[in-house]
Amino acid sequence: MNPLKKLWQKLHFALTGRFLCDTCRYDYGDACRRPQRPNAKTCPDYKPGK
Ligand code: SF4
Image 1 (cartoon, rainbow, N blue to C red):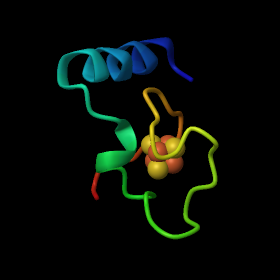
Image 2: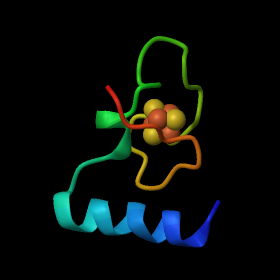
Image 3: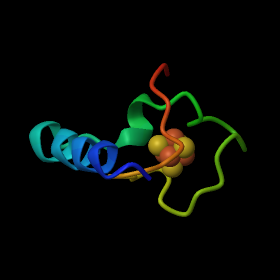
Image 4: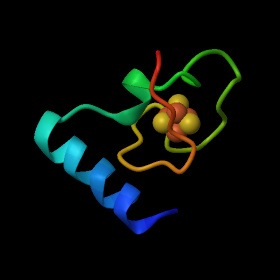
């Protein structure tokens, strides 16, 4: 993953305390099978839009 993207995601969690999955469009049903779901702090597949 792009290191800047990863850093930004970590910063987002540090500032908001919210996991990426909370706002990710793949956080439904079987759309995402990543082990870090639903508490991802960094994720290469994160897409906003939930
Ligand atoms: S793609 Fe990543 S951020 Fe989105 S739901 Fe899955 S683990 Fe969470």
